[in-house]
Length: 410
Image 1: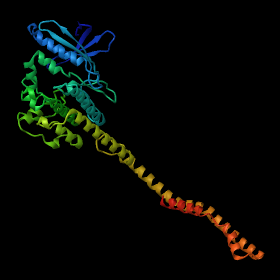
Image 2: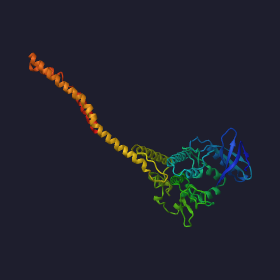
Image 3: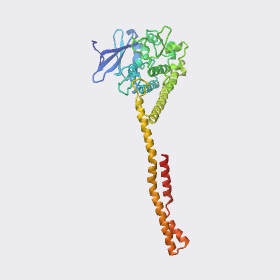
Image 4: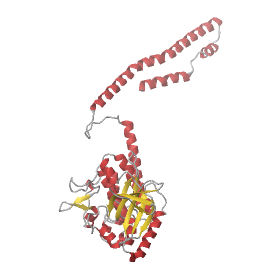
């Protein structure tokens, strides 16, 4: 059983995992919810000026405006050990990583659409704050809730910059792939080792790979015994997975047919995001706006489909339709149509009877008037005037015609 220890005003408990830049623990503070802790080990004491630069960067990150999809950096503590280290205290997310969520819910496309929009919104916010994440991957994308509507939170933003102040060589080795493991989400210009090419476009590249992997449920694990790892990759000559960034840096191109074949509009956007030339990639804000347009179109298509298509139950096997639910619906439609056709003459007769009675009364009254005029020796003009008094009003006849026409065309 792990023992807890105190760091500043926090009690640090169980270890949740380890990353390239430090350990992750679960910690508690008085009167607060549990928060996620990221520890970055520092160099020896003779490099205190680098520690000061890192702390200055952390102060900037802690003063960022709150955002729904950015894990809040609550604070930090410096521990003067040998070597010294910094503890970062961040908002705790209880839903696990994005990779965990996707492998638990592989078919939940609607939620994936929402998560993609949330991710683009978060990255666009960071870029507007002049922060380049540089390490976007499913492990740094946490899920806040495990409910039907999960909330995505970007974590470890700015950590690469902080760690650069501490150990530049280690950060360089991590992103260029010199350390153990394959940086699946690193852009090709980063793997080339030229720091001046590390712009916001590196985050757009990583975000494109995350969206691709999420919608296609891509698993980079070598065999079934390995833990699932959400990442797009190609198989190298040795059979081991090769990062897309490294693949593109060798001058190769990604087969478009292998990218999100069931989502053509998102595929076109993702292909632009993972362009080998970072100048050809859209900005994070453009990605967010494009995703919003795609989601609006998808919602409209879903609404139109629900308006015109009968709901049909499906069996457990994908693509197999339960035809038992379609037959009764068809028979009911036919019976309803036949009933309407049979009732049309009856309705016409019911409508016609009042008008026919009125016409008969008009004719009787006209005959009586003529007889009265003849008996009283009225002239022709006076007789016509009396007869016209009993004429039906023309609008009533027009109303009768319109009603009959609608019944016939129903």
